[in-house]
Image (cartoon, rainbow, N blue to C red; front, side):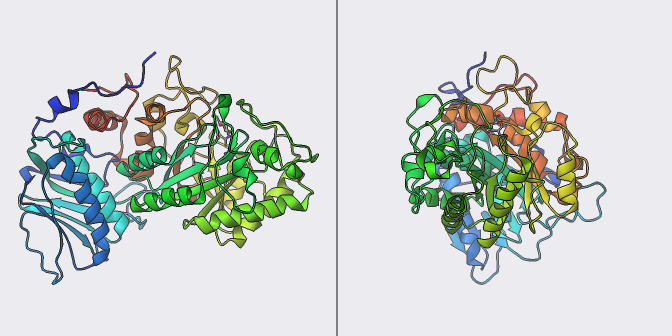
Amino acid sequence: PPAPRTPEPGRATVRAGAATDARLTGVLPAPTRVRPAPGVRYRLTAETVIRTGADPAAGTVADYLATLLRPATGHPLPVTRADDGTLPPVDAITLLLDPTTETSETGTAGTGSAGSTHEGGYRLDVTGDGIVIRARDRAGLFHGVQTLRQLLPAAIESSTVQPGPWEVPGGEIVDTPRFAYRGAMLDVSRHFFEVPDVLRLVDQLARYKLNHLHLHLTDDQGWRIAIDSWPKLAEVGGATEVDGGVGGYYTQADYRTIVEYAATRHITVVPEIDLPGHTNAALHAYPELAPDGVAPAAYTGTEVGFSYLAVDNERTYDFVTDVLGELAALTPGAYLHVGGDEAFKLSPADYATVMNRVQRIVADTGRTVVGWHQLAPAEHVPGRVLQYWGTTTADEKVAAAVAQGARVIMSPGNRTYLDMKYTESTTLGQDWAGLIEVRTAYDWDPGTYLDGVPEEAVLGVEAPLWTETIRTVPEIEYMTFPRLVAVAELGWSTAPARDWESFRLRLAAHSPRWDTASIAYHPSPEVPWP
Ligand code: TNX
């Protein structure tokens, strides 16, 4: 079975000599429109400056771009601001916030982002004199910067100075996302991951224009977020993990660090407190929440569906109110995820009782409810979002909830689950939802996948990584790459812009970047790696 592929020493350095190994048409996820200008290229040199227009809000993105480009180029790349609004095209990378920027194709055939007005679109123009990225919002400038990063030679990913030359192919890209929500999930409960590991994942999501990180913070095996009003949740409930490791938890300061770092990458954290099932760690810490008032033993196995909160006990609702209240105070994003999956031991009536109250508690915090799609039968609350993780293309309860106004995040288990094995011989992961090679992850359409869920009801896509079998960062990356990039393209690119044959070639050309950045990945035989 293949071990995670990590770069062999020296390999990246050899590749760094190639002059222009990026093409305008090689970007992942595929942009809405790409017009190469053959023969034209811009060369980034020791003279190049990064400048913004008069709007100071572009400055943070300009600083971020400079920190991306300085290590490998060794160039100073000063960040300047053109206060007078005049920007002559001389040897500069210019970032302009401009509310009138056209970032979508109007009048094109097909579905998707034709005319889409989601945040995050940009246009990028590369001429011999310089590069200009224009966007209506900062997220758009940030996404344009990720595109530019991919247009430079792979050696730009090196943390040490490389020879260059640093040439960018000429032309024009106009780009806007198809879906507003493009996410990944990390389960930090089954195995705990320290803050730096999460920040590294944030950086990988940002490369591919994903904009949400869902953190599965609680489950039977561990409670991972400190709650001041219920301290034993983390102190007692956080001390375990699958297979008997030491576990761990985020202090509120740790959690804020993650939220704030993600914000600098234009990524919103979506915290999940899984209710009413998947609560053994909480019940172990606070037996008063258990149906019989008796503390269950700590759990370090991988079965699901056995635990649940006492439904008829008001302490349960104090607990939910306190936990979600503290979490809302720590979380600037709009969404609070309340789980809702696999509460197998509760009757449908008891499930509805507890989850109806939970949904109202979320609404009282001013946030929008997200839940796994088993939440569908609970009553409709405005704006609520169901995360579909089923393995079929029809679900009547989800369709009925959508008819009442629910929106859906698409995470089909047999397409997007990053914990599924690639093939039978993959050593990590599970296979209950199927084997997911790269093409399986790529070849479906979130806008038409589920009966009764039209594109307008699809908020976006998310790839969850459950960690029963995953313990280390290289293991996270091996399961994530390249499937996460497939999901990123499904979330970003219009149906007409994407195509498996093009995707596999772009992925292949992209792998030297992962080698250079020491990102582990599955060397899928479906992709013609160099
Ligand atoms: C199902 S998907 C679960 C998780 C497991 C996962 C393993 C979902 C909402 N619940 O509790 O970790 O399968 O693949």
